[in-house]
Each structure stands twice: as structure tokens, then as C-alpha cells.
Length: 122
Image (cartoon, rainbow, N blue to C red):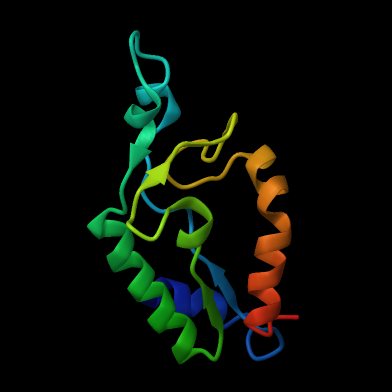
């Protein structure tokens, strides 16, 4: 991943600043937890997978080597204990294990903007 990403990014840097936004961590696909007969809200709470943590560390290290920024998405999807609900209120958070639902993205847009400002991306 790092080698292919380095080749891709080299076409744009140093003219641009690289920002890697981590995908949603953990969670359970809504179709697996919500649609089951007799499911409860707790059935839709997942955790942060070791694979996500390993990829996050690779992305963070890569961004650092090219002078870019890595932004952690965990606070937007999980509590401090690593519990990641598939819904916030009535809004689903993820389409699948890697993509957020546009409606949830609109809800957290101010927080994402704040993270970009804090990282001095803009």
C-alpha cells in the first residue's frame, strides 16, 4: 500500500498538501444488525478492528514521510472506549465498513472542518 501510494502521491507533491482522512473505524454493517428480527440497538455497536488500527498507523506514518497530514476519524464514530454505534439518533453512520452515510456527514461536517483547521490544512 505504501509503495503504490507513494507513486500516486508523487505526481501531486510538492505542489499540494496531502491530507489522508481515516475511514470510519469499526462498526457493523447496518444490514447485518438492524434488519434482523428481534435486533436491539446494542446489536449495532461494533468496535475498532486491529486491521483498522494497523492501516491507520501505516497511513499516519506515510503522511508524515511526505509532509502531509493524517486525520483520525475515530472521535466522530466511536466513544473513548472504542464502541462504535451504527446509528447516531436516527441517522445511520456508515454505508458499509469504509464509507459514511451522506446524512451523517452533513451532521458532522462542522467537526470535520474543525479537525482540518486544527491540522492547519486550511
